[in-house]
Image (tube, rainbow, N blue to C red; front, side):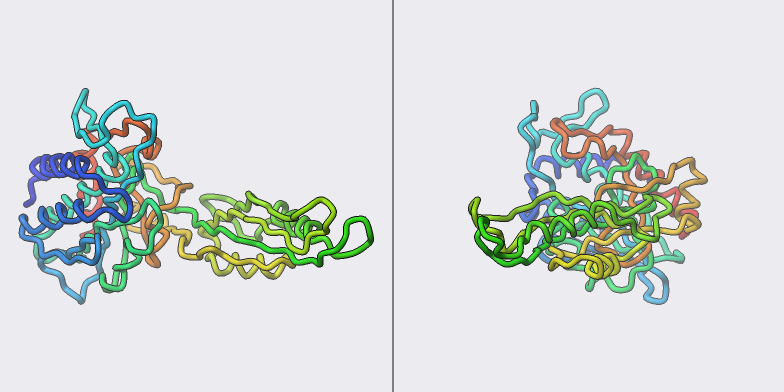
Length: 354
């Protein structure tokens, strides 16, 4: 199926169907059913694990590099500001309304269309692997992360998130650190104990002022913010422990593990990361796909938001129809024209490579 106009119509209809089905994170079984059904109807052999569906192009060749096409079909819950039925996929004034229409339904159906465009083509320089995944909105472990071992060797990834079809060539990683400063309890009226709050203050001051030696070309310095602190039980007891939480926005200048090691070398408190899964991502500006996008007038930028791109260990880029500013807003929408334009631009960029 290689007609872009027909693919755009198919993508729009599929998106309307997806919007009409509630698919909160961990509850995506019915949207997975629909995606599976539509791909099979178009001759695509599909694979499924929990609520993740993936497929390769028909003439997959293990001797060729593989491009991952990934986006998610889970949504957040609608916020209280909605004035419309979030599941009524109406088109008005060129806008398709509905929960998940922009984040990331438009990207998802556009990448499905891209796979269908290339699915039956022979003699491509690259394979394609489409992964439509779950739990992205909660950074869950049963989404893309669950099926990465099943996808085989991947060489480059396109992650569909709304970017106005500009090229997010880097994405910040995220670590949340739980820190505990240890002292010794004592009576506040006597010179007893070792105040854990004072110990914590020294480390908090370090988090506030430390500058990592390397800076990202795209993002600049790593940002660390102490966001929660807790200590003490009553006014006359010197606290034995003080806990605090640090939000660390990691750039592509470091791996999460490196940042964690540097922090532990400099502070006296215990530092426990909730996770080091959400890694920073980047791609060389000279990568052929980036150059293809630039040649078509697309802008490059660094994305401050985190997506499933953070779970990939390969060069990857975040790009898709829709606007990140509309994500999670009340009365979410995507322009109908953005979907057709997105499919066309994806294919124009890829055609310069494959």
